[in-house]
Image (tube, rainbow, N blue to C red; front, side):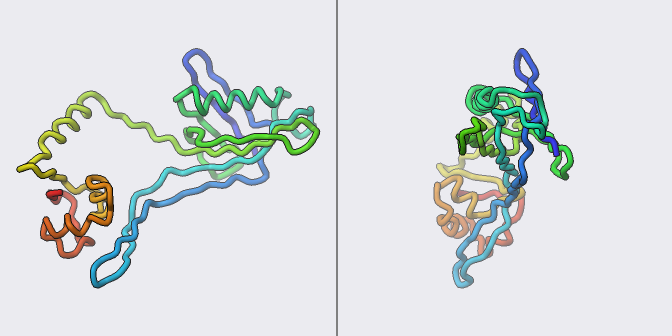
Length: 206
């Protein structure tokens, strides 16, 4: 298995193979489900949207010229400085390829990076958590539309909101009031008896 990192900066492209491949790679996926407490029914689970995938890699940067390393020898802390720069100083994502696995090549940001020593070899052990990067392509026209919607979403001193795919009363309440538990007051204000039957395109008064 080879793990290849590639970063396209302003003036140069950096690409290298992780010198020591990890024994295991942990991939974490999830869905933002919400538990809602309904009157006379108790708790129900509302299916949410997909969360960003994350991948955790644990390995070490070798301080010795081991025969099983995957790339030319580089001083361990050069790798450390590079990953820290990508984590804190550069806002661009990095592309990571996992050769020999079913994990597809993807763009990531570094969510966390920890490192240290375990023995006298000088090897630097590390844990790297990568989080899936999704680009937000919002142009000026989209921004103007959002501002226009914000202005138009005022009616008689009340905020109005149009339901879109993936919405629940809990999510809408948390977004506008700061507390998901206030969903029942929104339901009462809009004459909604069963929140599970919330229809896309419904205009709600908040």
